[in-house]
Amino acid sequence: MARVLIIEDDDVIAQGMARHLQAAGFDAVGVANGETGLARLRFERPDVCVLDLMLPGLDGWKVIEQARSEGIGTPIVVVSARGTEHDRVHALEIGADDYLVKPFSMKELTARVGAAARRGTRAQDPRRGDEIVVEELRLDTKNVQAYVDGMSADLTPTEFRLLYALALDMGRVLTRDELLQRVWGRRASHRDRTVDVFVRKLREKIDHRASTHTFLQTRYGVGYKLEAEPKKT
Image (cartoon, rainbow, N blue to C red; front, side):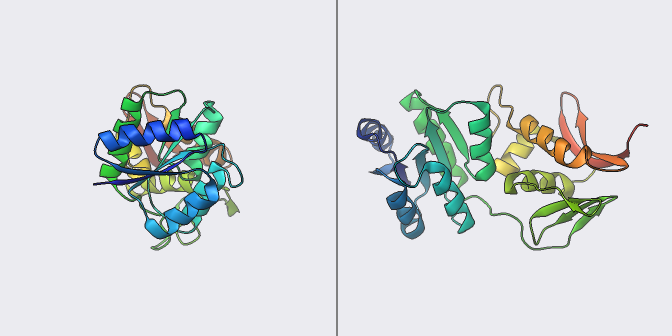
């Protein structure tokens, strides 16, 4: 029986989620603040965490950041009334695995939690292995950072994971679904633009800064690949 930790300060919502998850066969328990939730993540290591962002004291953003910085790989499903693209992307950047905007159906929550439980603990950032160098682009796996013409590209951990995944299969087109599974541990859903958004951010930080090449290449209708191509003059 998969254990689910619910971190939600609205008691009615928390009890409703717990009831539906328990009815679906999960062992679900709830806490009402980020400090207690983080402590339980540290010491109990549940199979999935359902996390609200707007919590008293330690908010959900900080819970995600702190958990990931400590190497806690429990899948985190965010549930929040904050539904802008910026909020969703930022949560995924700092380490969330999925994002549901309130109000949502309990059936969908149960399905998302079940998918997260099946995927299991997420892989942590690559911190070992040889660096990868492609023309003026260098991927430093020890520091989890990319450098363009010797200057840091200031990538977030998730941006680095995506770039690294592409670099490991350099020259081969990876589909959006492949990239979602490798980087976020989930399959693509209808109109899921997560990969496209992150590739756009990588182009801003890598291709736009590079002196002589572009690196993020699109195969329209298929996906993306990492390959150095001379910039058009």
